[in-house]
Length: 350
Ligand code: BGC
Image (cartoon, rainbow, N blue to C red):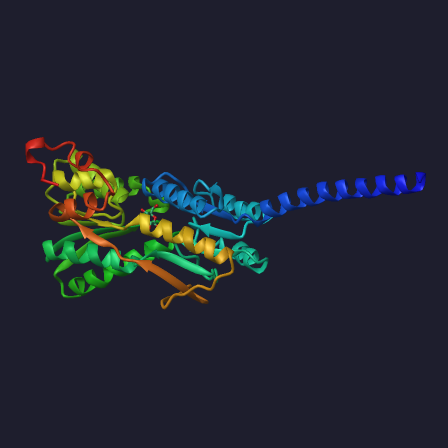
């Protein structure tokens, strides 16, 4: 009888131990099953990236994923180190805005070999063999700028201020506007006085370039600023010399300050890229990739070594004439923000 009791107690203890073990194990499994996405931004200095980050994270969370955010603060080595950290954290997917399109490639390839899916977000990685590139039609961004400025200034002196030479997009924008401007240069209709590249997209490069040119007596008819920050630097130099509004200036991103300058008349145009679409879709694709779903994309882009699937969204040219329909209508900025410095009696009807 005593033996039976002891065996009974042992059995009960085993069952309790088993229950504890399995409940712990199932907790662990639930934790492990949660999709982990590493979102890597190169910096948050420029206005748009905060929107990208917020929209991406909120969509990914709504889909049940956990997002580990890394900000490289414009430091190539730090961004490489952060990929390593994400590998150690065993993320399923890395979504990266590369700071340096070249030096980041080897570590991303290593992460890919270890089974992590890689999405290049907005900017392509050179020879990176990423699983997917998601962005806008960046060549078209440049074409839209170039074509509209050329239409308004078919002859005259131009200055081109390109973006960061470390950013693949800067070359795509350049390809876009130069495809439109070069024939006019060749025909002797326009002259490009300067064609500079702004390290880290610093607006100071634009400010210095325009200041120096104007101070040396150059007459400028049009400035192609590769984004709104560069346009801002150029316009600051023009403002100080009472030339703002007399020189055509392009930018892109539809930054709030750029939209304000457009309605005030100191910036000619910007190009709007619907960031919400990109960020939400990227979060969805990241979750799909983590779940092992195949990518369906008809378009590809050559990264210097590999053809990479490319999901791209359409940009739109914005000037004072379609500010309300495109920017305010799409909820990108509010009417009262864009027209803040204009007398309310002159505001357009929404
Ligand atoms: C993006 C632009 C942005 C720039 C500077 C580019 O890669 O496409 O939207 O203004 O980087 O951050």
